[in-house]
Length: 430
Image 1 (cartoon, rainbow, N blue to C red):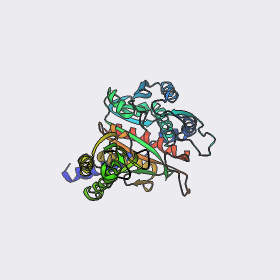
Image 2 (cartoon, rainbow, N blue to C red):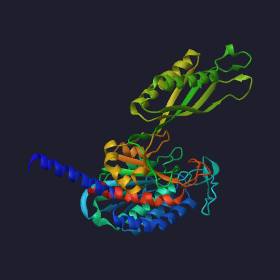
Image 3 (cartoon, rainbow, N blue to C red):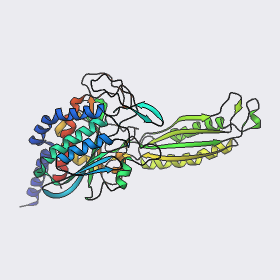
Image 4 (tube, rainbow, N blue to C red):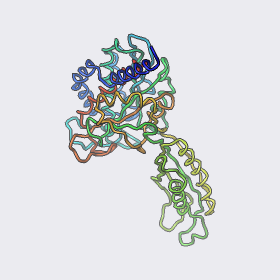
């Protein structure tokens, strides 16, 4: 066989494999169609009975019961309330992890649905309504469906699948550990070692049947910062006899914005510095002694993240000193950059396009929202994408984390099909 013939055969074989990867297994497709009603039923149950971060006790019991019923190896109480199921295929191979978050939010639901949440709980010493105002109930139900499908197709699996049901994605209560960080700390990506991880997020602003994705940075690293400013208290009628921490705070806010507008290469990625809360003073005619500012930094590029945090750390005390005061700044990392491994995206994109239709798979811009799936991606290559949940033809959708948040359940079936086939195609391509 000459070199030219070998090249032609290689191209034909590559093309054939790509076509195969784009097609959904007929049995998987049929089973996902059949399971749709069950997935919706699970989703409604979770929706009507939401639980806050690190308090997902009943939610995790329902998940564990389902996984055990499928015959999986199940570990409970991972990172407090998480559940992990392990499925070993009939043939050896790599290990892929699939993740769904399970916690709800302290948001009182207004959506007019028959399975509306009326649950109340205590959050930060205040009684609040609780609802799945971000769609984690759909993620949980989808992954339970995927587990049922793949369990019944062990003969098609070359390797191992880990089903990770993660608590506290919205952040653990103050003073507690939780979420993806704690799951990793407790070894969720070990024994067996995970080679790649997939996750999805329902999106109320994307039409049912469509998928949005982005290679590289797709969601932002989120830092919470606290700035404490110290001045000198005095009478409001004689400001020259004191040091005004409110004035210093204003100058700091103004200075921080120049880091974004004048120092950050925004042609690379977006970045945001926001001061969301200022606390100072007790009376109209007293210049107070101190002020506190709390805010957030959002970045999508590691180098920009490093630059912005460094410059904030330099700038805050310098500005305060210029006006006769003192200031400190402390950072708390809430999430890292949700970074989709470009090679993994390129490899798995044909599967998603084949199931959803190439015209329905949309290359999107990054979002400055945060997601702690990012911590998994710091350890292993990951691919995180958005699943449409907006009713076809509807003009406007309520944003996530709001009382009127609503998801069209007809979009869940596509999520089940994609996650099932991604798993098979990844493992069987090794």
